[in-house]
Image (cartoon, rainbow, N blue to C red; front, side, top):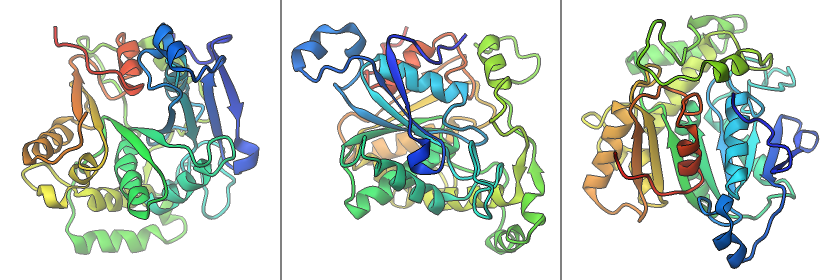
Length: 334
């Protein structure tokens, strides 16, 4: 089963009261900023000192979801400080018109929430890394570029975990405009347009999949169990279009937000080869095209888990995943 609290090794501070939405800071129980301590501590060798890491969860999840908590604990055990929070529409929603459970509020509202959680006194003004998974990976690309454009924050590096780079179904602009209008109509906005994605295909015996970890996730009552609403789906289309919706053959490097990010910050792409929720070909193709075009920041790298699916936490090699998320170099291929 996944380690969700690591008593004695990490301290978990609830920041929700100050934020009015779910947020946590997960950090090492003993923090030593000295270079000698970091050099001598095995737990800190995979992290970059006392680095702050902003974790952006994926669709249907929240900051205390077992997947997210396990990643945050894994980062803290490697010397980092993991800052997690609920995206609009997930976790501890206030049920206002703008924060309804299962209704993702979109990129702009998510960016506003990112700015707010980074303003908390416990982390205000610090440089930080970003780890974004799935939809959170697409948001990481968008948010990092926006924050760097504004000159507001020093972003040390970005880790993208099976990021959403393109929508499986493509619509003409006129159709998307019509769907956007409909998604603003009460009742219609909640219409389910897609089933809830599943990490594992039924009967797939080849996938490296942690059934006990999935059971922990299934037992979590705060995780959204419904499908994708019309409003959420439309906002996903808007996000991927901003980032450049398509494969490497469809999106030039000049229009690719991922390529733009890679020129500005060390970026690591982590994928599961058996991911059926977001097939990895699009993100790998866009990443390789950016590398091929040149001008990328030093330290950009990608690594694939051959038997993993969409959630890299739900596999036997999750400790390797945590190492990479904490800043380790990819291991040598076997």
